[in-house]
Length: 312
Length: 312
Image (cartoon, rainbow over all chains, first blue to last red; front, side, top):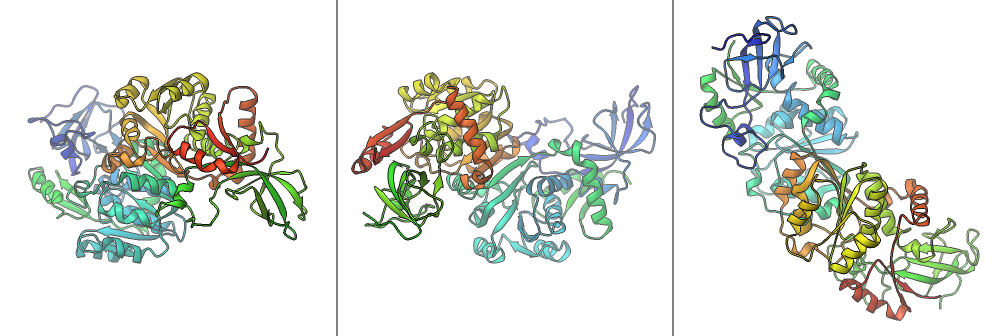
């Protein structure tokens, strides 16, 4: 149990968000993630309560978001904390629909792709925290949204619960022809958040002229339609970019978050309050169960934001 | 010899522009180009003089640009002609630096890539009509321009005559390391006009965060560092797009030409008049020599805009 540092704060972690990107630090060599060595703390985003403070900006009881990893308590100098003072759907939602994954969806749809009414927006991994909000924001903009997911249950969730216009199970044969049938007017925007793979190759020929492809800056959802199985079609891709005047635009949240965070919170909070935005959380109790929850997530057995409730 | 059509014009072709894209119509199956059958006219852009007119908008002596192909005379109903009334460097320049290739360079640099002073801009096929203007426009915007060309003579032209800061001969071994050495601050913009290939793979790891890659809508310069030899690296490409917040933006001239043509003419004409923009034309006399000139172009033996002077 750490002590309260002079001039700092002591945090009690309430929730830990599990994210496939931690694997980058554990075993991927070419990742952006910082390498995690044996004995170091595994990274992750938390929402915490201030339980002691010697810092003028934080009082006991404040709720803060930080990237302090798999811990129960954190001694912080008060930097790299984000205090929550906006009205939130729930404390846990600050790690999901109203947090990092939610903002990625918002940036990709609202700031980069900007779907127009009547356009067709395809979202890969549409049952994921990012994908589910992306499709719902596209709907709110008046577009048709077509979600791709793995398995009957996820597709039912995408279309039935999230309200996408169509859903496609990429585990079924005939992905390309099904997608073509469900997008009779082509695709005006493709929210790319899984890495090049069979879905990319199915989407590419259907993209309309001037289609936008935001390429999301979070790590791919491993265990999904991942990059590893991808046939490599760079020549075709660049030819389509050229022939169809496509825009591929990579992004990470830090580019937009300072300028657009308040608007994001307002839009998505209002959408949740009005019942136009739905989300799901997959909550495991106890930090000791985090490894098991991570494995379940990597095996594709979780649903929505994967959180560990570290303290009640 | 065609007759003057009622209400139309009769044109005498002065110049024909040769363009690798005509091959698309001749033997490529998957091209955007309209298929050319035996006995049909091979396509191409022309500049012509009106020699007879029954059309209120055109008078004898007017100079017009049209896409009427490999002919000496054209009977036209007056549509799809563009009359030249701006001051031009020369009649032939309307098919090159002040025409379609020039506008493609202008759109890619000035409208899409928008290099800032001090940034590094890399241009592939920098001795081509498009590439040579692209690099010179980047210089005029205050950027460092690095041109890639095939062979010593082209590199001397790129750096010596066109005034690029650096040139690289992609036929020499060590392309990737040479490029890295000549771009010590990375690459902020890459003007892509050749299709995926070894150059793409050399450029990709050097791209800085927020780098822009306009992907030019004209056909690749065949015989150069073409797509056919390309290792296919789609997964790496999309990963870099994501990790570095890159923008890949395909375009064709028609998107911008109506809104930006006058500004383009003013900018480039002024650049030519001031000696800040240089260009080269490779002119062959006589329509009967067009096939030979086309072959020379495809073999990479021509330099600059490849034109056939059909009439003096």
